[in-house]
Image 1 (cartoon, rainbow, N blue to C red):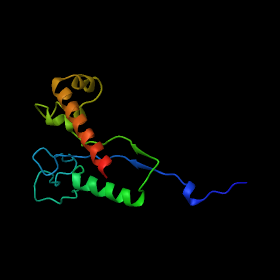
Image 2 (cartoon, rainbow, N blue to C red; image 1 turned 90 degrees about the vertical axis):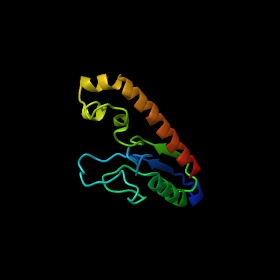
Image 3 (cartoon, rainbow, N blue to C red; image 1 turned 120 degrees about the vertical axis):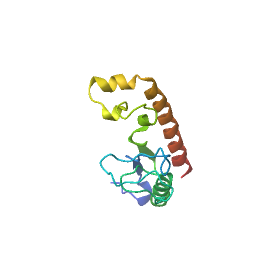
Image 4 (cartoon, one colour; image 1 turned 45 degrees about the horizontal axis):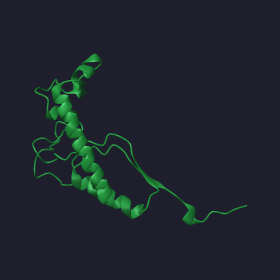
Length: 138
């Protein structure tokens, strides 16, 4: 019979639904449609985030700093989706009905192949790369 010591314990970190918004506190910040009182595009809002807004860099940095305190050397890290802000495609849409979040069924596929959506996905890739750099630096 073998016994396990605390040094044999392994663990991992799991990050989900970060919704990192590098545009927080700028004119392009995302505001949830259900929260009409949310102000996400002002420089005078809390740096750590505000209800109805997606996560600013300061909040992501803080969460990662705390994670590194409580789990300094995880065996691995899982980043499981919803990593970037809502409405990224709306940064490139020419009207409020063009974004894929406002579509259902076959209209989603049509929006996905539009020129503005291609630009939005390139921007999404830049944001996720930036987020991965933030995680790597934490």
